[in-house]
Length: 216
Image 1 (cartoon, one colour):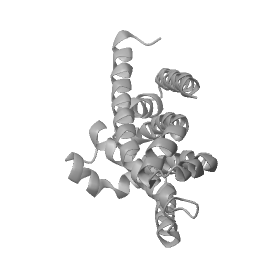
Image 2: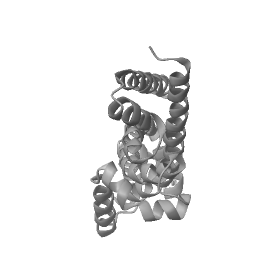
Image 3: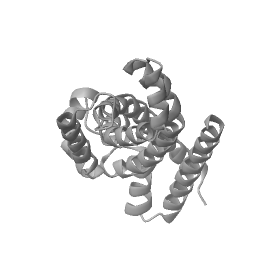
C-alpha cells in the first residue's frame, strides 16, 4: 500500500505532468494553426494553389513528424536553454513537447479543413465571398468539431510524450515511474502512476467526445 507521503509525491508529479501537457498543447495549437492554414490555402485544390510552396512546407512538416521524441528532446537542448533558461525540468520540457506536437497539430487541422464540403466553398464563391470570408465563415466553422477532436488527440499524445520526458529529467509521472518504480524496484509506483495516467486520459477523451457531439 502507498502511504500518504507517497501519494503526495504522485499527485505533485501529476501536477507537473498537467502543466507540461496543457501548456505545450496551448502553444502547439497556436503555432500549428499557421502551417495548417498555409497548407490548406496552397494545396492543389485550395483557395490559393501553389504546388512548389505546398510541397516544400509539406515535406518540412513530415520531417519534423518523423523525429522520435527522445531524440528531439536532445537535439533541441540549445533552444530549450535559450527559451526556458535551463535544459531539464518541467518548464524546460514544454519546449520540446511543443515542437514535437506542432507538425502533428498542423496535419490534424489541415485534414479537418480539407474535409469541408467543396460544395459549401463553391456556394460561398458564387455569392461573392472573399478568400478570407470563405476561410473564416466556411472552413473554420465547418471544420471546428474536427479540430477539437484533433486537439483532444494531441493532449492524449502529449501525455505519453511527457511520461517519456521523465527519462531525462522532465519531472512528472514519468519521472516518478522511472526513479521510484523502475530503478528502485517499487512496483506499486508503476501501478499507481499508470492508473493515474489512464484515468486522466479517459477523462480527457470523455470530455472531448461530449464536446464533439455537442458541436456536431
